[in-house]
Amino acid sequence: MPFEGGQPHRLTFLGSTQAAVCGWSADGSEIYFVANPVAWFEGETRLFAIAHDGSGNPRELHLGHARAIAYSNDGKVAIGRNAVDPARWKRYRGGTAGEIWIDASGSGTFARLRLPDGNPCWPMWIADRVYFLADHEGIGNVYSCAIDGSDLQRHSHESEYYARFPSTDGRRIVYAAGGELSCYDAQTGALERIEVDTHSSAPQTVRRFEDAAESLEHFAPHPDGTR
Image (cartoon, rainbow, N blue to C red; front, side, top):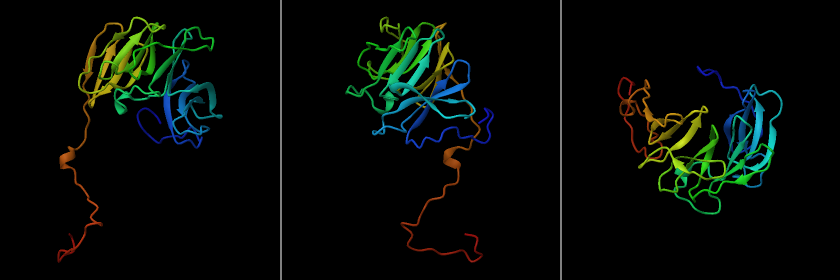
């Protein structure tokens, strides 16, 4: 739909039970997404691309199971597998914990990043570093490392709520935590909350309509029929 709002336009018709947008191609011509139209297991999502206007058929990227993909400006590729949101599976360390795989040369050969056991997910490129979420220190936060997994650094400092749903423009990362939005600037190292004002009714004052069908035992209409 247009960014200012409007009628949504459906782009894919794969018949999958899961689908999620991963991002855009560098030239803005394609949208990358994951879906499970051909998998025997519902969680076995694969990567696809579709023209931004929905023309033509989606094409599979043939990179195996993945939940996220990110391209660097110089052709490197990062793929996130398994976990998609550590906040929904806190401190999980089992066999389907998140993994990040890197194609450091753009040749199509991937190697797994050697990271602490902490469900790393949502890889993002900023300059020559890979940024991601992980919870190996107890709470989900934003981290980064070199393309070989070395020089691991933490960039956010959430201590109560998990950092979730990060997105980057190639310099800054915006993420949610505990109902608030935060922005991390990779060039300056600054981290700040984003103030968001929404025009809506207070939930406590909005009229509520309860479904009383299951417990209704008696009713008495007003004489004038209004209530």
